[in-house]
Length: 536
Image (cartoon, rainbow, N blue to C red; front, side, top):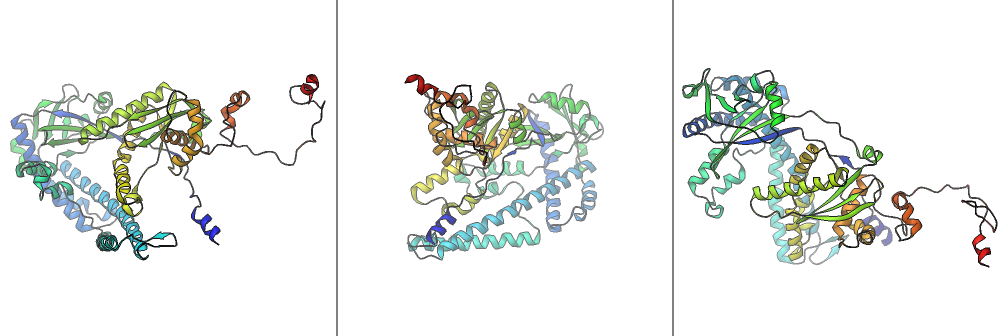
């Protein structure tokens, strides 16, 4: 009975099939605006005016609740907003309100299962006496920690009840300007801000200067237009601010211009063909800068599947994401490591802009390695850590080691790395394949580290490099665990190791021939036992 329970407890979970990460659904580029003092006054007046009505429309949308698309009363809301702005500004406001409501509803729906997991985990441990272990569940080591977890359970239960109430009412909590910045108002000293600096950031976050694109209109956008020849920017003013216009038809032309150096050719192709381009005017009070963002949707691209990549005999650059570096290994179509494994450093400390720049630099290095080795794509793990974040120290250990491990997991830029890699690899003509992360580190270190070290004699191979090789093998449909003895150093094995170590072909059963004797012809025309007779 005990053995059966042990086998049940150690049963391996089912592995998900590898899949191709879809290409980005659109593009977004940015250029800096250098407005004059008069331009700043006009932009602030227009942004504050539209932002006030945008917040009112979002509140109206929240009161409507979770309904179908035809019951959101968007036409009625748009008609009311047109009186205080214009029809195009009203369309952008109602569209942004709907998108924000849908996004907040999805985030609230994702929070509920995370809270359920955390509550269930704490309750299971509270049901076991301190210092004991019952049915594989360990109780808390001390009464002090048990009391702390009881208080934690009350907090999580309250949050869960609030989340369920909001889901039932269809009213997620939305803070225009950001919840983090709103809470910073109560701790300005800790944030290193003065009241005026906080107020500038809060006002800048709550402005609304977003204009949706329109296909068929001049340069793809009538509300905020950019001349592709000279880069002049013009904004259609809302009706109550038309007295600030300095151009015909209630428009205000900025004194500065933009160029859009990054992906300029794609932007020019759209604006010259009068295809829709969305523009956002953004203010950054911390730097004292203004920016103009241009974005547009991209057609869906048909990317090859992992099976098609294997059929093309394609190589993959396998990447294992770790804290502080990326472990890289090139694998061929048979799953064999090619060349020497590489470690790409990623120092993700400091401000957000510096971290993002270093992450982009590391991804650029990966793309360069893939091109140098003739790889058709990159293989990564499909990391989420959603359940890990929810249960916290209940599943990630306690004490100094558990705290260090949780800090390491929190420092892994999984979502940002995945999004940056997907976009940059797509523009470089590479495919990204995501695999199930289960057992890659354990099995890679157990079955692949020693053969990889034997192949790379001048490089110290770590378990992360072996995990990268395991990721690449799984992305191509091969198993991680190798057959015993196939990778031994032997001249005959080296000649046929390209396929012998990756696929275990079933033997043909029931067709075994009679045992060979001396003099019986074998493959190659030489009779069995001829060598022994000659030696005699």
